[in-house]
Amino acid sequence: MSQATVRLPFPKISIMNSRLVPVLVAIGVGVTTSFYTFQPLLKQFEEETNGTFIRPGDEEKLKALTMTKKQTSTAQENA
Image (cartoon, rainbow, N blue to C red; front, side, top):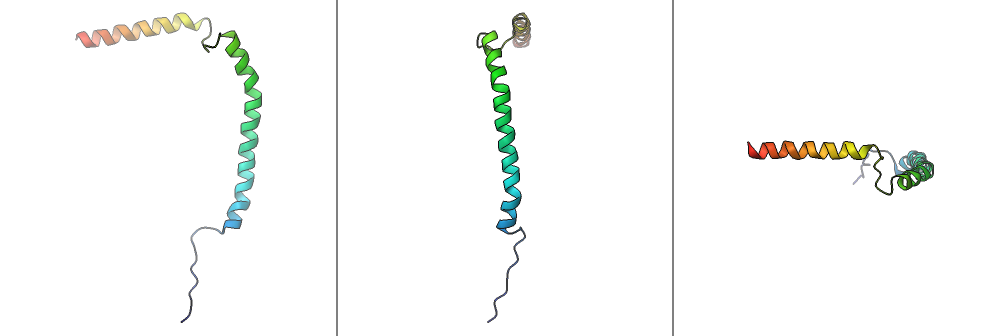
């Protein structure tokens, strides 16, 4: 009885790990950098908008948009 070696269609695990490590490091560095870059900006924006994340000029636009949607849905229900 002779044993036949089976070749797997994917690379060895050691090769996969060597390619995977730089990718994971790059992702980690990107996420960490983004977090520390944008966290102060988001906190400042939250304080300026009183926690609503709606700019002062957008309140009127939002009210007008919701009124338009309500009128449209009411007109469709009546038709």
